[in-house]
Length: 363
Image (tube, rainbow, N blue to C red; front, side, top):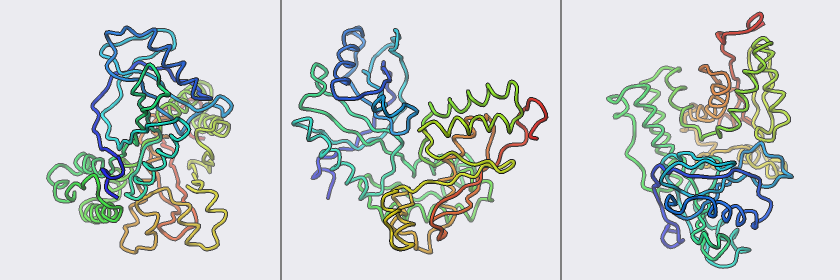
């Protein structure tokens, strides 16, 4: 189905200054009350559009505190007061659909959008956005639902240029895909791009390019990792400090299953993307498909033409976490992957040797 027929629109939204509150939301009235509060506090002359709600899928918020949401307004100048914070939201691309009608049917509209993006193999980062076009009645009859696109092709081009230089990058990056390109086209684009990279880059360059294309792990949990590590490092060795980070991760729902440390290496085993389907799978092929997080290759895992380097993208998920926590470059190796024929994906995160350590170094 075409986007227009499905009522879906592509938008590129420029950098936006917002004033917002981040909190746990237990029911729709919590959203309305927060919008009403913000509207009563924010100077009307700085408001630049309707209220929004950002739903964060990866969160440290305990489940009994509700859905982790950032609720706010776009503004024209900074405003900070109490729990209201100002931030600049980066440029983003979205696919959007507008729900009109009763609130209890909003999930049905969301599923229509998610069904479309799934059919096209789109990747998103770990949040979605709602725009409440009637700020006087944010739970009213017009709510825009936005799927935020993780533009893998643009990231590949950007990091190829950074690592290999513009001249080489221009020869290995295929032509940009149309917004409505098929899932099969996205797969072919990625295959061609990685095959060409393999002809021009050594292993370190391949890793740097492809791991930099991973979809983005949220910054707030990484900041928590870093703070835990830095605090522990005041009195502990590097490995003891990392153990404190792992301990924190084990009781924080943002990470699910933390890595296990084996000497100077952290072994991270990914839980299946679809745990229920994985548990019910009757064949190895079904288990591998249920385990895979990538919508582009999930249904094509036995395609022998997909380069194994493709899964370096998944290594970037852990690279971002641990480089943020340790403030050092981190190398991540793919130990197992469903693309290789394994039932799950597993990664080795190598602890840097030059951490500027307290005590007796890495011992």
